[in-house]
Every structure is written in C-alpha cells, then in structure tokens.
Image (cartoon, rainbow over all chains, first blue to last red; front, side, top):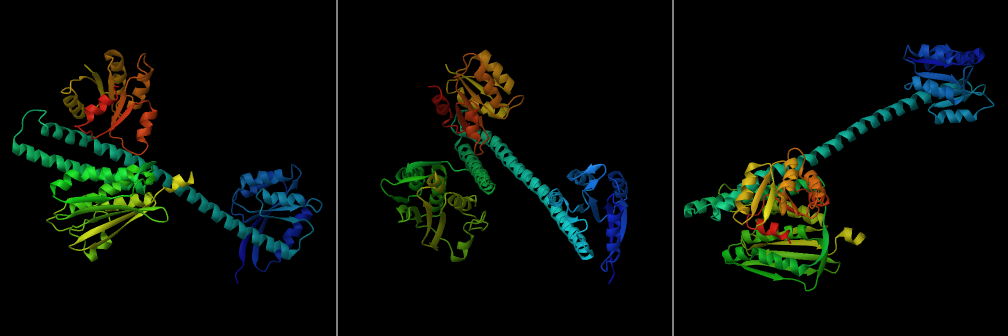
Amino acid sequence: MQKNQIKVLVVDDVPQDVEVIQSMLATSSVNRYSIETADRLAGAFRTLRAGGFDIIFLDLFLPESKGIETLRKIRAKTAGVPIIALTRFDDEMIGASAVKEGAQDYLVKGQFDTELLHRTIQHAIERHRTEEAIRRKNLELEVLNKKLKEADRLKSVFLANMSHELRTPMNSIIGFTTIILKGMSGAISDDQRKQLGIVKKNAEHLLQLINEALDVSKIEAGKISLDCSTFNLTDLIKEIQVVFQPLIKKKDLYLKAETIDNCTLHTDWVRLRQILVNLTNNAVKFTNKGGVTVEARQTKNEDIVITIEDTGIGIKKEDMGMLFIPFHQLDMSRTKKYQGTGLGLHLSQKLAHLLGGSIKADSTFGQGSRFVLTIPRRHESAQAS
Amino acid sequence: MIKILIVEDNPDNLLLLRSILEPAGMEVVEAHDGLAAVAAARSHDPDVIVMDIQLPEIDGLEATRRIRKLPGKSKIPIIAMTSYAMPGDRNLFFKGGCSGYIQKPINVDTVVSEILGFLE
C-alpha cells in the first residue's frame, strides 16, 4: 500500500519537543511525513507562504506570543489548514479553549505516544475536511437562498407590473366602447351597436381572463391574503340570486335557493362570493332547459356545504378528471359553443383551499352537474384569534 | 358647478374621463404629472381630485402627501384611480392620504356617482 504524503509544520521554540514529534512521525506505517519547523510566529508565516500544508502543530507558548492569542494570530493567516495545539502538562485547560477557538485538537506535551499522535493527526485532517465541505455547502446554499429570494421578489414585481400594464389599456378600450354604445358621442346605427357590443363583450372577457390569470399567479406566489369578516350566509346567497336574475330570465331558466336562516359565517366574503359566482355562472352557462338550484346546509362539525346543481348538459365520466385543470375547458372542439376562460374552476378550487375547504363535482352526462363547496363556517385564522 | 382636477399622464384615459365627467356637468381641469398636480391643486382650487398613482416626476402618493400639506387642502377628497390592483395596494393608498380608491378599468355607468359620493 502506498503511503499518504502529509506535509507538517511544527511551530515550537523548544527543540526537544520538536524532536519528539519528528521522531514519532518518522515511524508511521500509514503516512509519509515531510516536516518543516519554525520557532517563532514570523518564521511560521514565512514557511506557510509556500502553501500545501496539511496540518500545523502549534505550541501556544512562544517567546513573543502567549496562550490563545497565538492560535488566533496563526488562524488569521491560515484559515485553510487544521491546527493541533500543543500545551504544557500544567496548563491543559488552554487546550480545551484552543479547540473552541478553532483548533482541531490538542496534545499535552509529554503525555502522548506515537499511536495517539498519529490518530490525532488522522482525525484532525478528516474532521477538517468534513468541516470544509460543510462550510462550502453552506456558502453555496446561502448564495442559492439569496438568488431564490431575489427571484421571488422579481416575480412579485413582475406580477404587479403585469397587472398594472394590462389594465391600463383596458380602461380606454372598455371605457370608450361603453361611451359610444350609450350614445354619449352621438347616435349610432343598429349594426354599429351590435358590432360594438361584440367588441365590449370580448374586451370584458379579456379583462376577466387577465383578472383570473393574475389571481391564480397571486395565489401561487402566496400573495393573496384573506380579508375575513362576519356576515349572514343568506345575504350572500341572495346577492348571488340578484346577480344572475337577468341571465336566468334571458335563458328562461329557474334559479332556486335554499339557505339556512340566521347562519353567520366568518370568512372572506369577496373570495367566497367569487367562488359562488363562478360555480353558478358555469351552471347557468351549461344549462339550456330547466334551471339551477343553490342549496346551503351546515354539517355537525361546523362546516358549511353549498351545493350548486343544474339540469344542464352534464360532464362525461372521462372528463371529470380534467375539471379543475387550468385552460381545460372540456368542450375543446373547434366550434366551441361555450365561452369561458378555462381558469374559473381551477381558480375556484384554489380559492376554496385558501378558505380551508374544497370543491367536489359529480355529474350525469346529459342530465346535469352538481358542484359541492365545503368550507369551515369560521375560517381558521379567526378561530386562532 | 363641481370643479374636478384629473391627474393622469395617459392622454387616452384623460380624454375618457373628460368624456364622462363633462357631460355630467363637472368642470374638468387637468394635470399630467405629480408636480403639476400639486401646482394645479393650489392654483385651481378644485372640489375633488382624481389621482392616478403611476405618474412622471413624483408619483400620485407623493403628490397626495404634498397636496395635503397645502393650506385648506387637508380634507379635500383625493380619489386614487389606478390600475394597481395587487393585495395591499388599496391600504397603501389610504395610508398615503387618499380618501377613496377606484380601480381601472373604470365602470362608465357608475364612476360619476362614485366620485360624487366622496363630496358629501
């Protein structure tokens, strides 16, 4: 077996002590040692400049530097080399201090034999190598962490800018279209009214897409914070009825609501309303005969269950798995009959999770669908406070 | 007649607001950046200010802060009208001294009554 080459520096002003180490090292069967010596710190620094040292033996008591200071001075110049401190028999305590200050180990002069010396060197080198590896990894992680934090910050800035920049042109597109449609800038023909109506409808659709895409991004970036308040469930259900009344009338459908009297919720009104509007909108959109039933009930364990059931076209069994996946509106045929962003259900599910609940769906193709939203009556943050 | 100062750097959005507010019987004065907004608040003495937030020179929040320091302007309604719609933005505007917040795109049907609502 080939011997390992180990380069040693012994810093000690007592020639006899240096000789002890030199002779012990010469007998090693495992390592081949090349040994340099220095009797003062200045000499040690000069020698160390050559580089390549694997280990330093350091007598803590030199004529010009005494105690822990000696270790500090040499550590300042040789961060990369493991140090074994040498102490006197009557001052072993300082050895322990030296280890605290970064020495790998210490030996008490006159108290070690060849075997202990070799083992100490071996351990010191190995431990130092491990420490170095950990230190390097930590540095890498620190850099990586900084990069991630910066990326996260940039993502937030990007989201905010994107939101701002997309909304600004929508303001004049939708605004002026509305002004012209209202006849505020003069009379328009029926054809123009119809065409401009299409422009407006599509601009609003685009705005909805922007809003939903941003909502999804905000949730994913953890940028949506809930704004919980206490309110009556019936008030919210009534509002949903009012919102959809015109559309229900236009499609000649019914909209039934069964709610719980005097049921107060403590959760985010805006987000819950957003989910219910979304689910009801889907139900109305995909129903051409019959109607939609919104039913609320409370479970024993303080959950509120809101079911939105329709008598619409229904969903095929094989499509059920795709329901909550973004941009997967199920009817992807070229003659897409039903307009939508393809984000609504995905967003609703994410919002439901945010409220501490979830949405489940079942359906019979050709007969209708049922979406069931379950959320805690009191949002967790409210319970904690 | 209600005099309204519109602070807006985008000419299209400025024209849009004019086209809505003037037929509603308001007298419209304009400023196109934050510094001009402060000067106009002083010289035109408007009843209400509609303030865009992202503006050249100084932004809408800084302009609001400076207007609030002008004599007799500590209570004037200043309504932030902005495309900033991230969570927390609304609070930021109120903390910065705005009296109200209207998000763009504006609703042509309701914007006049929204503004009048701040003039109680």
